[in-house]
Amino acid sequence: MGATRIIAVIFRVWSGTLARHWVRDIIGRMLSSPPARGGRGREFTTIFATFAVYLFFVMPLEAVWVVAQSQTLESTHPPSARSQLRLTKLYDTPKPLPAGKAGELIRSEAADEYYLSADFSAFRILYHSRSAKGQDVAASGVVLVPAGTPPAGGWPVIAWAHGFTGAARQCAPSLLRNLQYGPFLSMYLNLGYAVVAADYTGLGTDSRSAVLDVQSDASDVIYAISAAHAIVPQLAAKWVAMGPSFGGNVAIGVAEMEGEIHDPNYLGSIAISAVADWNDVYENPKGKSSRMIEFLAYSVKTVYPDFNLRDMLAEKALPAYQQIDESCGSVDYGATFAGEMLKENWKKNEFVQKFLSRNMLGQKPAFGPLLVISGDSNPEGLPAMTGRTIAQMCKQGDRVQIDNLSEPQSGMVMGDSVRDQMAWIESRFAGRPAASNCP
Image (spheres, rainbow, N blue to C red):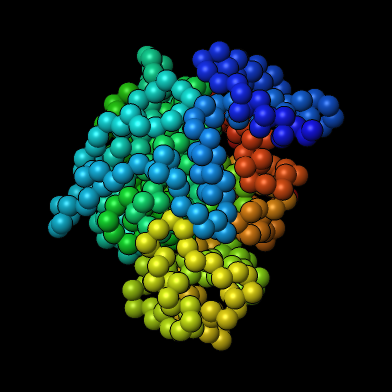
């Protein structure tokens, strides 16, 4: 029986307060000693880190699907009724939307429906953000605050950039009982970090989602910080951003946007698993699922309303496209059908080119250090960050620490890198210089 199988079995039978205290102690001991690099020490560290994270998953078993679904664009099954929360009035965007500064809080509500293995308070927020065109839009999210007395200066903040979920309102992570990544968010809370998790505009709120547009989503992550402080004054000013899978792209996008904003309280970003260049992702669409093509077209149309879908999609692709914002699942006709969905020379369309260009990472200097944690492959079908992109980021002077792990699954990369994540975050809040291993 492999280590992952053992962990899964133990996870199913062991839960409760005793387990949580044991996990907290294990993580604390791991973080207090230097990382093991290779050999049996590394092996033990990996097992305990993964074991610790999985034991935090004290919640209904169907919630396991939510984490799995977030790691793949291939899943077509919607969340179960028990894992899905209902939309409340908080998510309804005022019409017309009153003018407000980016980051200004519109409304908030306390929330007690989340299944996390931590003692915490939760507040959903609706706040002003900015669209790809700089227009005022409403975005939603959730603020998670550890129980107890905050440290001097307030709770240090992790701005969480979530992975891909879909384009429909109900795909917002704040509408899932475990917030899509329950075990990891629980761990951060138990270690004394507050979490500010943006949904991205159009997920939760009743406006059109930009889905795969990194700049739009990064804006929502950044402006959620100000809104969170308005409802929870016990938050510290300092913050880091991090995200898994597609959220890793968004976390890098936050760093590049901060290159223009220069917020002195922003300390850096972590990208976990499969930070990718969309040009690389769609280089060979025949090897991609129809669903990936649909979401690209939807994203281009959101950012550039004048884009004519028929310049990219064939007629037989339109029925599936029209269902894309109706549920978190989507019709998938298989990878062999993807090529049939597209018009010839679709990538030469001016709006497609503009979209791919604006989402190319490494074009703007990052403000603050970066930790990039990547596995050998990623279930979304996205390549790991290309050497070209890393080289460009390093060439322009970005401080990048690259941690390559030999894990085939995004979820395992997250678990195996727990120790490195927390050591890096601790160093940022402690004000220590960030390492870089740029080639």
